[in-house]
Amino acid sequence: MGSLFSKRRLFWPPLRVARSEQALLLFSWLCSAILLPAPRVAACSWDDIACSVQSFGYPMYLGVASSIWTLDRMLLMLTYQLEHLRAWLINIVFTSVYQTLADTIRPGLAPFATIAVLIGILAFLAMPLFGKLEVVNIRRALVWVVIGPMLLAISGGWLGQIESFRTNMGGVLFNAAAGAAPGELFGAQARDMPTQPTLLYAAPSNACGSTIQRAFPQVDGGAPVPQMDDLAATMLYADAIDIHCPQSRVSQPGRGMLPLKFFETPQPNYAVDGDISEFDEARRTEAIYNIQQGINRLLLGIIPCVLAVCFALIQLVFSFALVAIWVSLPIGLLFVFFNDTAGGVTGMFRRVVGVLQASWSASLLMGIVFAALIAAAQTGSATSYAGLSIGGILMSLYVMKSAVETLITSMKTISASLGAASGLSGGGTFTKAAVGGLVGGAA
Image (cartoon, rainbow, N blue to C red):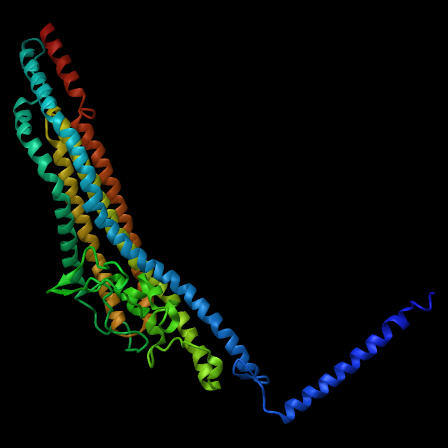
């Protein structure tokens, strides 16, 4: 029984057959390789290892490039969205909030004014007992009875006009500084970047099914002026369709995975659409090299895209500072009758002027940065442009710090102005006057 089921009798015959089959297959394969034409797998011959490796690796390079382009595209889209968020904040949100607040406060102006004048009259009648009491200035209260409702009615539309004025004047300073481009200061001419900026939103476009245009277009002599995101898109050979709706190019080279111009020849020729296994060795090597250069370009493009986002954020913060001041104006008007001065309201307008000054100074500094970037872009060197963009980001961080400090100062001004308007910060006036009157009467 043991000999019947031994390992030798059970497994030796199958093992001997398998080895003979393997020898026969090996012999047949060698004969076919020598005598028959070379078979092809994915257009590469079986013995062309380099072709197989390159054909397998090229889609991986495309995937890496597509992932990096997604990040670049997200930053450029964020720049566009921040600009339109600023327009929405000024034109829609503020208008609605301010109108609601004004409608709520407007009916209370007359009662507050009546109470203020009544308190002033009572203080005047009590002058023989307590001396002069500066609780309410009757003359100033009567003036604000006339000015308050009028200012409340017309000031709602002022913010949009002031924001447009701030943006336009900032654009003038920006363009004046940007026009002083330092020529060939940043190195010799190169050819790895277009020297003329691509205007992403030069005219309203419906290519993506909805209107794509700038919320705050800048013009110089009637011609649109390139912005930070325009320069970044130029470096990346991208247009508005590549950024906002690449899915509309599924039938074109790249199917929206990369900017369409990446596939253009002879420049930039970063990518090819199709299977590179059909190319000869020289073209395959060139395709691999070009896609590697395209990946480097997309990585460098992150820097100017971040700079464009920083510039959009700076403008948004300054707009927040204006909105915060303007929304508090109706509340200041409500309590201005009880203050011996109009500092609660006039302080807000002084802060608006401060915001405008800080904003224009920031625009001038960013215009100088933009002038340097324009000069670097005109050299056609993407490396030079990306290097200066790093300096631009550092300058943007400094300007951003100034913008945030302006916003914080505006919030403090609002608190101080409302406190003064409501008498919370100057509440000692009545007490000091009353004590002085009592001491004088006792004497």
